[in-house]
Length: 126
Image 1 (cartoon, rainbow, N blue to C red):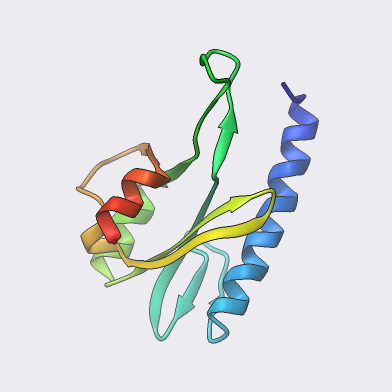
Image 2 (cartoon, rainbow, N blue to C red; image 1 turned 30 degrees about the vertical axis):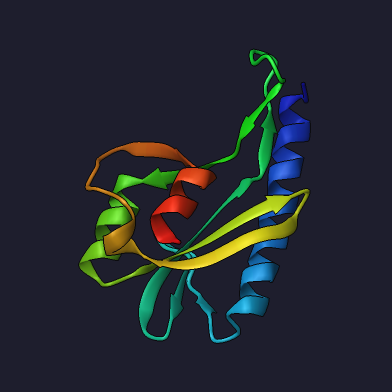
């Protein structure tokens, strides 16, 4: 188990790596950094990333599949404005899976926040 400061540092480092990966894959991307991350071909885009596997002490194997964390307010805006999600699954900051997904086709309407396993998302978009 890592400390909160170690987890925060790891999350920040991974976030920077993921943003670099997405910028490389989508060079036309324009960061705006407000409620949503960017604009891509005149469409709003939110970058979501998760680890391929997360360590869990309460599981028999000690791990679980990584999960994307979605916010209902962002999802609503993306759907309303024909937006996109850039979804990245990584392992120690190295990209293992990337897809650009239409927000209106990815999730059912929800409010608040929800997490979804990257494997569930992959089944929905592939």
